[in-house]
Image (tube, rainbow, N blue to C red; front, side, top):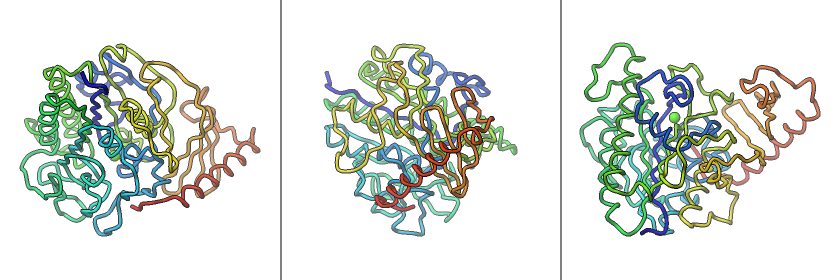
Length: 400
Ligand SMILES: [Ca+2]
């Protein structure tokens, strides 16, 4: 019996909450995700650090706010320094050092140069791409029309639909590692349903991108189901935490776009672990997806680094359904926008000017601006955000 659990962390790219029925709408056929949700915990208030692929990945990989790390936009292939610095201690590095076998299958998006390859960030295995927006079949990045597809450090040209290839490799990893004495960490980072909107294998390609998007969501559900089945067949379910997350909510179909409003920040997240997480558990406590870093580390018995600011907190009590009051200030930056949250109060600003204060306990959709009733509070929160930004800027190790 292993001392620490296997951890499987599956991430969808730009899958809005409307896609699945456990957040109310369920406009697509996602039976495997829906069942997974009912068998474990659904987080109603999992928030993202920034509504963008590279910073989002930076957050859960480092346990640090992407603004503190310096990944504030998408990494770029034309700049050899654009990527996640090796000074950062990734979750893969942390778990690797704690005795885990670590694998990343799918989207990395934290640097194109060989320096930033996931193998240099603590992953034993990498099969995937550094590209942000890649063609699912040709694997070419839409900006430079080049392939950034690797097995480990080697460029490869395997044929097939990206998520099929990644799921196949992830399942091989599960089958292999379930025979080994050491626990494993598997990060399966799907490209779907991020654009381009291309019908997956077995689906008729439509001229309507929204129909292809639907197929991509449904195919993603099949891939998730294949992983769940592999865990079951390997007989490791009771020693395996499986987390499903969307890196952001914004997609062309839901109209939410990339903003710092709650409808963009709250994302799909649910998890299963038979015997540890009760079926039909729900939590409403706000937390941020970078908290997975500290949560995974705690489950692995690995202390988080103490020589730097780690924003992540261990969210395990929420996995067990225990609600906790929000006892830290949360900050967001995105382009010209900023947001600050203290308890249920959330302040928005654009270009450094406050433009909305909301009480999320009574106004979760941020409709009733309270700025006029609390000018001192607005000023104090703005000042606090300014101090936070300056502190982050003094610490940045990386750039994007
Ligand atoms: Ca994304």
